[in-house]
Picture 1 (cartoon, rainbow, N blue to C red):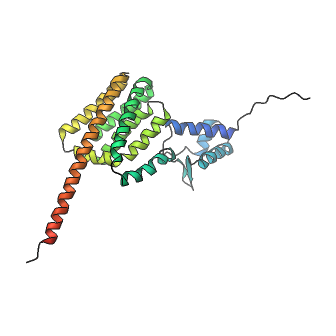
Picture 2: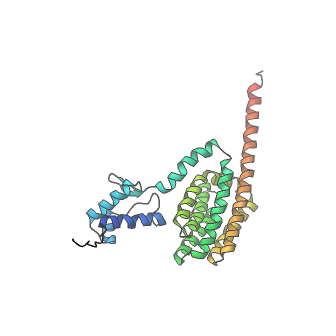
Picture 3: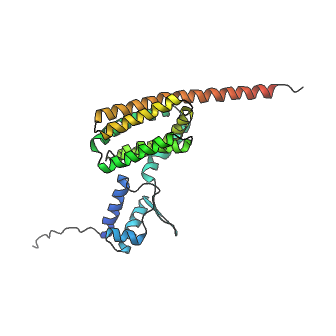
Length: 261
């Protein structure tokens, strides 16, 4: 009777390359919208042949992780965020009360993210966080609302990625994307209140300092305090917007009903 042979399964080169690129996408080194380096450069970087690289990219494309454009390169898709984002975006429009649930979830997520970032962030993570923090402060000193909201989101996303938990990183990105319109609306209302803008900057500074000083409990508390402020100020913002819309409708009705002389 022949003896069973012990054979090791040697992974295909293309599988190993696909796994390496997929890991970069999961960890956030490659983000949605990023273009992969040119084929020749990437093949040299990874030490593989171009046919093996093409096969690896095709494997990722079949999963929806990357998309190749005719003559325009290969780009990382937003599939990891969109599978969460798309259905909830539709639900938000139909059920406005979900906004409060999302903010409650954001408080939990960002509190934990800040705590873990304070524990786990590498020097490279802190460098990126410092850059995001400085960019946000510069944005808050301008009147550009899009720049403000984008910089605010980038700062919180840098914290999520510093946790070194891929689910927190991608859930944070999806949640911030889902809340982007509300964040922009809120910042738009608050920009005319100097004390509120100063308080926001102070809260962000508190989160940033606690993470850089490796104080997990303080980082969580600072993040939760910040989201509590955001929840309350957003609620006031939405009430203010609703009152203005009601007043405008009444005014339009009164003018439309005024008889012409």
